[in-house]
Image (cartoon, rainbow, N blue to C red; front, side, top):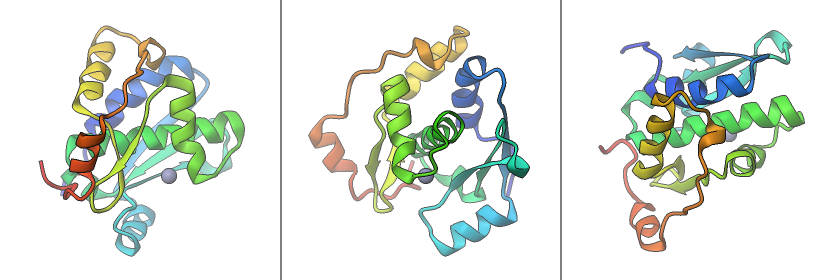
Length: 165
Ligand SMILES: [Zn+2]
């Protein structure tokens, strides 16, 4: 089992760091808390918490199994965690539904919920866009994402195994 920083963390939070210069964001891989949460509920692959109650320091915990997910789910879950961070930091909102709504509201990013585990997912088109903007030194504010997944693609993904690549 590796403990390396997930690639989607590097890209997604790299795209948001310049927008939140007063906020420190640390990845934590395989903490006791997240591994236990994942054992209890297979759907839990990540969690975002404030560090020692400090409102400007966040930890994004990833279960080791996160690495096994297909990229669309790794990115979808990471963006969902960014949504939690934004909802917590800007709106003091801890609700589950606030996470997806905040990334949709701030950056127009629609998170799908698909696979047999009903996990957050983004398309490979959107992943390509994230990489392109990241490599150009841009931020999430440069992403004007407006397209949603078409219904037949979504239906096809509803019952897939999220670990399949
Ligand atoms: Zn959540």
